[in-house]
Image (cartoon, rainbow over all chains, first blue to last red; front, side, top):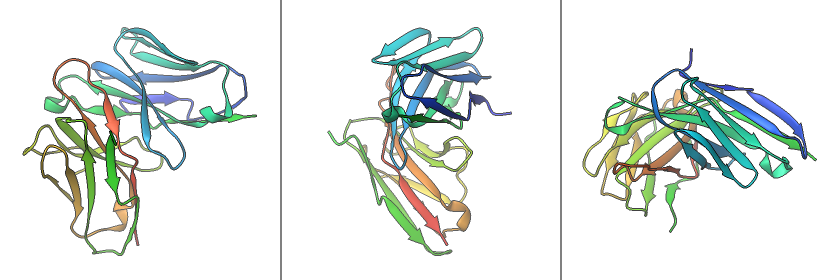
Length: 112
Length: 114
């Protein structure tokens, strides 16, 4: 079983829909990251959080440390939001690096 | 600032050939990382460098070597490429000086080994 699990693996939405991507993890963490990867492109950090909720534009990320679960929400989705969204956790006790452990990503396609 | 840069963007090798992937960052970050990304799997750490002059193995180091040439540059070398090393390779860096440090990624190198 992977230490970081994302759901769904694939998601197709219509423009304007509210989207939720989920991430569950099984290790102790110091932080959780949400990353965005466009097709053929690099990886961009969207959020880094350890508690509560963060908002940036139409994106909202929440985390529940007790339940070891995080969600990424996109309000009023747009075709330009189409990308792979990756959840990654920074584990504690992982040596000097405090390594990042990555989920396999959620492929989002927003249709006009 | 250019952030994290990688060269080349694309490369095709024959089995047994060698090559070096270059990575540089201009953010004065302490830590640098090499990952590989394969279909259906999360990014996996190959090697990392917590500071200039130090390197350590990650999750999948076999078949690779690294050099932290200075604070800016961290290269990944394939001495004898194998088809199993066909992947997209990402370099990343992080300030990693206590507190709350974000990790920044390069644009990736798409490597095919025939």
